[in-house]
View 1 (cartoon, rainbow, N blue to C red):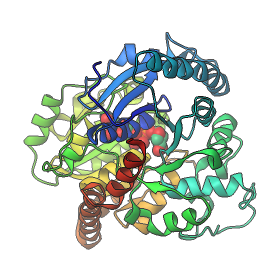
View 2: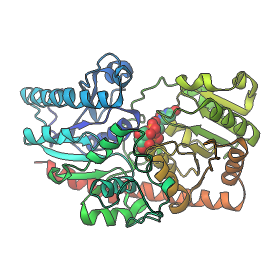
View 3: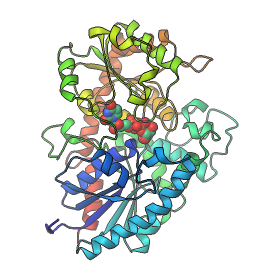
View 4: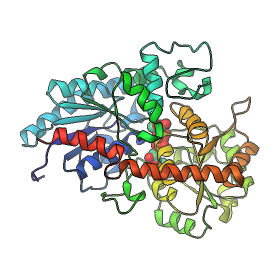
Length: 455
Ligand code: UDX
């Protein structure tokens, strides 16, 4: 690539999963659109399998996670994957830094996902500016910070839990790794390790916007200074006057024809469709899939349901054939395009942080059905802090039944409560746009980082 006289060269290193790649990619594009040279490094496997769309503001490069043929799915365990990612990642990030130096485009700054704290050591070894990128909600990070620093002792012995800037939290509102800290020990260790070397980072940036989590941001900033830089969604969808390059993230699943999906939505009245997605990782039981299927059918609303190919066999037999015009089931869709379609009335979501922020940024109210990790805390905030949705109730067998599903959909789609949630969602949409527009809180924070890098 020719030297276009960029101010500085930033290397962005996401954690290699869908929910971490999207926000880091959009953040990199924003840095790129502000005049920095941005190189986005994902794993060999992801790059060659999913081939990112070329972008005007970032270039792509690769590192190795030690599983160049199959990525995470080739590994024996989460622990095994994380260990090899660290070993191979450290070496290959160092190689990239040396490569760009030889090419005459030396890297000045490494922006790395906070799940990869070893990247900070690599950055410092080469004298680079290090920016730790916290992908999840500030509230979730502050809870992990509390646990890491022994301010919240585990197992949690009394509830509700009180953490500054947050409503009182019951057990089920904490991230699942905290209330059930034995089920995924390797992931739990990883989320706590985010904080072991943050004092050496030059900046901590959090994928949220100030007004969305103002009280938490203020409380956490007092002990751990941070910058809000979100929402990391393509601003094109928020306001087409905002100059931004391309629309899509990097899909790790085969995208179905968006023309078919959008054509189907075009035939539906405004606000009449429930959009359903559980993100890239959720693994629901057969019984739960059946209840969902019957609940959506029973609600009598149109629905567009993303069921990943690996989950499809869990659908009741002949369900897809039987739903006719009422529903559409797809394996993966352009989620931002769908959420911004006027036919969508409600998002039935697992409350992954990206999905939550995307819905908030587009003014779509939600039914939250969290599964694990940070989603439980996000769902608490969706219902009780931002008041843009409701959280489903789980029965004594751990299932969300069809009647509950129908009830929650009606609550959001109809009546006074539904109207209030929609109004609140529209308010957050405006505030999200404000944050990333010129002079907004996130935009100013990004400008500050950029100005320190440009020399
Ligand atoms: C994971 C965790 O589960 C989540 O809780 C965490 O905050 C980030 O990492 P994931 O479960 O995939 O992510 O959920 P989410 O954070 O919502 O990210 C999914 C992304 O995939 C979103 O950006 C969404 O727009 C995109 N997506 C999803 C599509 O583009 N198409 C789809 O059909 C479904």
